[in-house]
Amino acid sequence: MTRVAAVDCGTNSIRLLVADVSRENASAGGVGSLQIRERERVMTIVRLGEGVDRTGQFSADALERTFAACADYAGIIDSHDVSVVRFIATSASRDVSNREAFIDGVRQRLGVTPQVITGVEEAQLSFAGALGGLGTALLPAPALVVDIGGGSTECVLGSTDETSLTPDESFSADIGCVRLTERHLHGDPPTVEQIRAARRDINEALDAVEGQVGLAKAASMAGLAGTVTTMSAIALDLREYDPKMLHGSLLTVAQIDAITEQLLTMTRAERALIPAMHPGRVDVIAGGALVLQAVVARTALDHIVVSEADILDGIALKLGEEFAD
Image 1 (cartoon, rainbow, N blue to C red):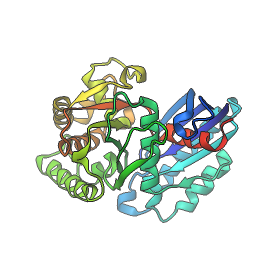
Image 2 (image 1 turned 90 degrees about the vertical axis):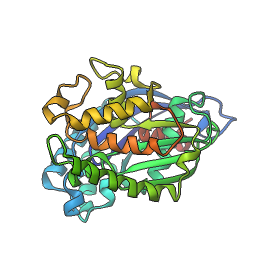
Image 3 (image 1 turned 180 degrees about the vertical axis):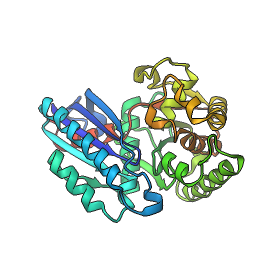
């Protein structure tokens, strides 16, 4: 058994998973032989990518928020006697001119150098995390995994062979809840024209996705990240956010359509009153809902499976391949 810490720093949030990774059957090999036992999972909204789409760099305030979260995470990691730490940075960190300031600040606080990964690498980790967390029974092949982040959305299609969990097709599109909100959804609530412009942006991006990923071929779909899990919490009418209730839950296309329209017509103050809504998602969730709605519309599916397991679990599995006993 090896205790690992995985950190995922995206456009909207930074998240930490501390977990024990061990081999279920050492002779089987591959990630399918690994098991994760979660010790602690933490999420902090830092909005690192605030303004990046417009300015091309991280703001001083965004860096300060992110570094404060890193300092908190350093304490958590130390308290768990972790053997190895991996810090992954995704969409926002790929786009900026002052990336070194971010890397240096993280290194000072966590003692680890962030790895700024490509969209393809992000997609592969998300696929492995989701399939490893949900298992294959809920996701007949070919399975589509969609990870809606703040700056980008990863679409990954692949088999559900537990011995590999390697995607066949993947693409990372520069559409995410923060990016779309900053570009288009300025009204409170957004205007019809703002929504129309966002949908145009999304559909142009999904045209590019379909050049690489056969969305219509999917026999099943797993939805990852805060937009999807929050929409499922709304559908289930949860009085508080409950990961155990959400993981493996089903979200129908009819529910996705209804909740998307609901979020788009609500004011920011009204969205903030939704019991399971994290304060850091209030102003951007409608943009993420538009992405989910558009992706599902390009499949032949009538529902998706909601996953709390995601890129963090994929990072932990990857570390397990390298270090697990």
